[in-house]
Image (cartoon, rainbow, N blue to C red):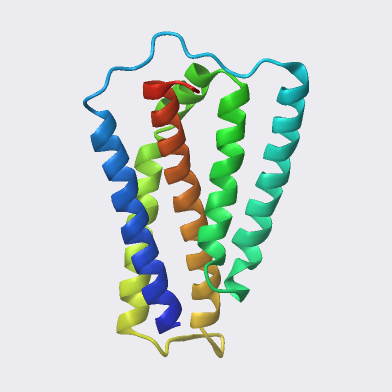
Length: 169
C-alpha cells in the first residue's frame, strides 16, 4: 500500500500542477468567438463510437486498474479522451456550461483533498483492519477510482480550455 500510496500522491501532485499551469497560461488569452466543431456525419459517428469505447475502458480500468501500476492514471486518460471526443463533435459551449453549472472544478478539488485525506490516514495507521481484513485492500481500489476520476476531470478541464481559447485548429 505504501508504494501505491506514494505513487498516487505524486500522480495527483503532478497532474494538479499541469491543470493549474494550463489554467494560468490561458488566463491571459481571450476566448474564441466562434468555435467550430466537427460536423461531418461519418466523423461524428466514428468519434462518438470511439468516445463510448474510451468511456468503457475508463470504467474497466477505474474498477480493475489497481491490479497493474498506473491503472488509475490510464483510466483517467481514457475518460478524458472520451470527454475530448465528445467536445470535438458537439457543442463546446453547452459542455462548458454543464462544467460550470455542475461545479466540476470544485469536484476535482474535493477529490484531491479526499485523496490526501485517505493517504494521510493510511500512512498514520497502515495496519488498520475492518472485519478481520486489512483495510489496505479496499484503500488501493478506492485510491485507483479517485485518481481515475481526478485525471478524467483534469483532462476535461484542459481540453475545454484549449478548445475555448484556441479553437479546434
